[in-house]
Length: 106
Image (cartoon, rainbow, N blue to C red; front, side, top):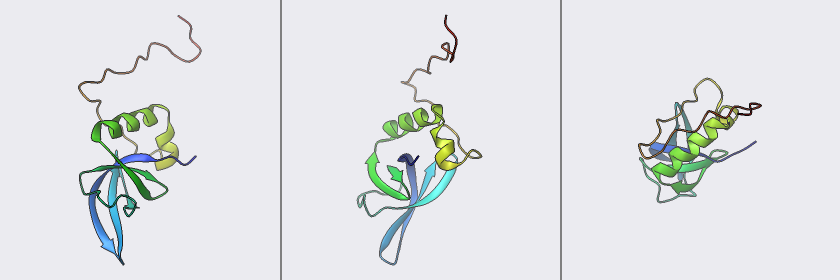
């Protein structure tokens, strides 16, 4: 499955007229094309789909989306199992209720 994953732009460069950024996804860093988000700069968060940053998102939305994808197990499929980490929850967020386990009725 191909999903857009939120990541933080660490730096960017221009190669042969094409903007390329180094994007951090938790513990994984990959390069992505930035031409679809011309106003994106280092420090911004972007949604990356198949190697292309397709939109900007704010930091809180990026962290919420990343955490949700982590909980659903979707990041391992997209980024690989060895380096996927989840950012710490924002202070305003409450941790998910883990009292309901699959197959358990209470």
